[in-house]
Image 1 (cartoon, rainbow, N blue to C red):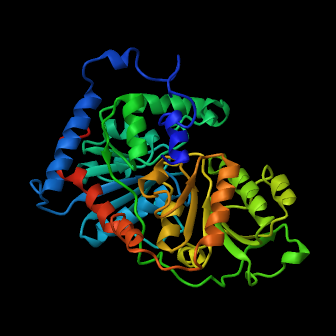
Image 2 (image 1 turned 120 degrees about the vertical axis):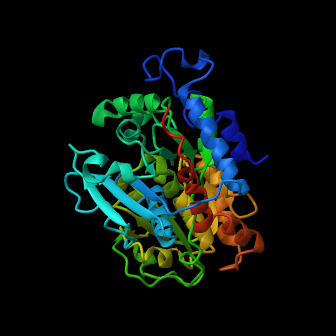
Image 3 (image 1 turned 180 degrees about the vertical axis):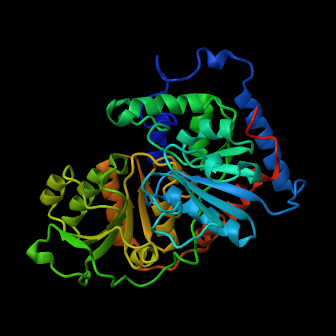
Length: 439
């Protein structure tokens, strides 16, 4: 068995501790001893209808009006998939309402996308969805974050689907115990919501396992996807960098020199869960024996907490800070390897995008990534936080992998099953039936 998998199994399905629960976690008292809950009825009804849809016995008879409650405007893998949902459903003739709660936003759709919903509505903080759009016309509401579930179950007559795509509270990140930013109260709210009778979908088997183990919920799998028409192999991008960090004189230049291997990082430096402290240490170690040209695509400049490690690493890191989404596929192209160092992920969208771009992937076995990454087949995996093992597999990949090898048939077959149409086929199933989401 792969060492990374063994490490994950030793700790169970949670990366921190054995359980999410405590004396004041927010769950109803003695909930696990109850024979059946309204939430269990919702799960059974949703699962039955979903199976009927997949088997073809439940077929659409009309186009639907679907409301998507977008949780924020940040560039994340989860948000990108919600946007793809809207794009594909509109193209199939459905009426899609994009809704977002904000006192500052002008549109519900995030500013980084050109996708347009059929209807775009912004709920101010004092408003509910029914105040800005006739709720009687909505067939189903898709919720993107647990904060929105209780309000919509009470305020909207249509079925409500909560698509769980992962967050710190689901994985038991210690940040949830902080009083600052109401993280502790948000954790309690998450526990309360998990016992409500909402149709529940999970983005990966890892998320399904946590929901089942910790809350007794039988969620339906709706995976994320990658657009292989946008993310595909190509030549190294010449797009200008936003900035360059720690540039030793011996490594000047914007393009890799002969014999220098190019490694790509993607992700938000401000999120500790992304493990960039480990990535920097791994890259510094490999750079001692094999010169590296490093590109980092990130939402913001590296934080002050990372600067000491960056300055001490001796690495020259080229930054693309908050690039336009239309440029993103180009920035993946042509690198020798992609390094992903997260402590945990519900899915791990950058890994899938790197695979679609034909890059050699070195990643941590961080739960959601195991959905599509197989050690020694389409990726090399190491346990999270294991700097030595990550360094070994990265060195192995950039030294021995033939430069820009074509994707294998196995890689292509894997990606065909994780494409946008497959994801949307799954996501529209809940809207085909009227009885799930309210008990």
